[in-house]
Length: 74
Length: 507
View 1 (cartoon, rainbow over the protein chains, first blue to last red):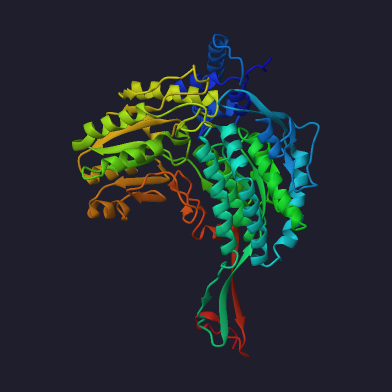
View 2 (cartoon, rainbow over the protein chains, first blue to last red):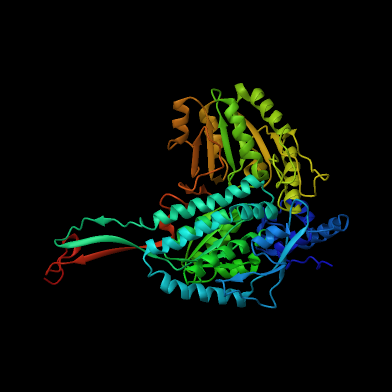
């Protein structure tokens, strides 16, 4: 079972465990992978860098989105 | 598959920290990394990743090895690299196949990548006798002034998945003849190819009775990568990856006054002039945009077409795209394999949504290909009304944006407008346009070609780019200077003590 997504979740882990998160976040102007590689940041650090104001709201939205998209392998 | 992995000494579970044949370091606390075949989604093997503890062990070995390696004459260091090249010749086919198996580029490109390793080893062997310094005319009587190039120390090499072995070799072959030792952190997408290379390097080091010259630490960027870039015992980091990570690497390295060689994002374009040979242009565009499924730093991402030929060239490109065989990259005749992982597919789809929002017209492709596998997509052509925000970004996927221009000045302006500056090309039979493109007011990229595409560089030239591509240079030409420290020496063989600029001090 994958760990809960928090502000401290490394992007490397997020991308591996929840690849669908990449598309969702990219549509919200938050790009987790560049040149095909995940950034060495936590979710919170990336949201800060991208100027997202309400971090928790976006994480909650992401979780809701992922609940509708379960995927069998990373 | 099993036979291939065995041939390269890949086990079911492998250790991810190594400094030589008898120096594999395992930490029971090291997290496990599973490597997948992107074509099938099947797990290939596991790696116990390096931890802080095992990283420290490897760095100690590399540092110890440097103390003696730097004193070995460079041409003798070249003999080790010569043997590395020979060993790579022995393993060319299986190592190339493993590249294909682990990251999904077609077999011809996988084997070609190993050939690139061999080529750079050959180059480095010659270089080992040519690490020249200048002799400079001194203004003082009976003085001799000259430059020497000394080794730096441990060179940290951080590579990306898309060229999982070639980029290591560009750095490792050059750095090692320069007298440095090498610490490699590969991409977490391609740990097995790095372990296979380490076994080959171990064999060569053992034959020469040495260890600690070529070293490996497989691990997460946020753990192993951060440790490397913040370590003042590592005076040079050669980083291949994104602009955003390059900034982070550069800032960390500068804090301890280290150096970095940055090979970062590209957003490469080909200008196709009205007088271009369209047959040649189309073949080049397909190789540049579709090859490695659009996941090269030098992938052709933008075509800037003269208005008068836009309808014809667009039609020809689309007809060619329709004929691109997509499938298992190990199979003969296939030209495009999968993307490296599912996240890359998601990233591509999000970029296409944005392109459409910004007025892009999808001319070809744009869909996932689930029947072939979860990581397969169609190569895609999008006509853009202008160079919008999404076109300024590098999306690591086979998306080709078409833009139009009216005169060569406008073409160059569109070309140079993006923040990246890696590779560029113009197709023209007009000498004036070609020269303008290569001139000071032409392409602002590190690589600028005429009637050749943006990808497929030879090892003999210096590879790298300007602006947000980072400014670093690797591989050929005089890129070796980045791996050494320059020392200016003056010897006074007179019996006087003249000062420079004729200054008199206490005479």
